[in-house]
Length: 193
Image (cartoon, rainbow, N blue to C red):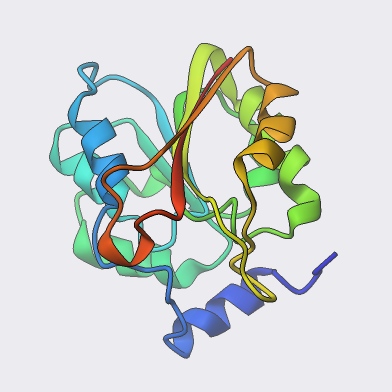
């Protein structure tokens, strides 16, 4: 298990601008998913949010019940500068695995591929615990392998093992709308509790 993936590790990555996962805006598959959401009252969590472009997008669309959490304070401070009206009480500098609230929707962007793969079942279990009945975990996962890591890759059959253990409905489809560098290597995940 890679135990050094802590707040200091991620803060150093931001300080050294080693943020290859940061695409400078919301992921196209997630943006298009968000665009079809009708209920602006949904309580939404984005774990391992980084610079949280999806949260900014949601907030600007009128979703005011969005919570973001990251181990590193650096991306949260970046977010505060970009979105000064975002409620400070919904910016959570801490560990996703220690949260104790309920959400209608969890949006996964890059946390799952950033945690040590030995924590993936725990991630699935924690996501399920944080969701209300019929709540959903949606997100984009890599459907490819990487040397070393993070990011840590994987595949659909492996992911089914984790998520089907904690959710009643699990669907994964190849992303048809990934950004060009990620085309053919992402799947869109929808899990319902």
